Image 1 (cartoon, rainbow, N blue to C red):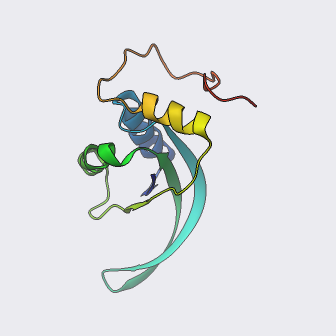
Image 2 (image 1 turned 180 degrees about the horizontal axis):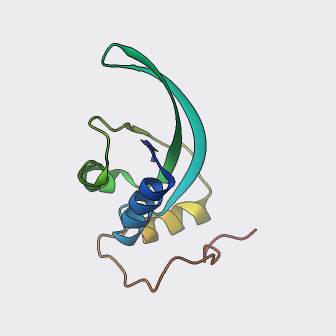
Amino acid sequence: MIVFVTCGSDEEARKISELLVRERVAACANVAEIESVFEWKGKLENQAEKLLIIKTIQSRYGELERLVKANHSYECPEIMAIEVRHASKEYENWLLESCKNTPKSRKGIGRARRPDCAD
């Protein structure tokens, strides 16, 4: 499952991404710079935002949504999920292992390769 969440700042995007991965409700979150155009409370808005592209499993979605809402600054944060129909078996195995219910003790955020994925 891929979940999209928009954030208003780098700091908020990083905080939410790291929380979701640390709590094992997501295996990975990509942060991309985007520009959003939308109507909010009768006014046309044009804002620079950060888009989180979050990889998770369906059984962890409820907890992911709860954590995003509890830690997001927006009154109505974008939280939209789509199901993935196909993925490599290696990536799928890594995703399932990464989203097991028990949070692991993690020493910090690094740049390690995914253990089951080859370049």
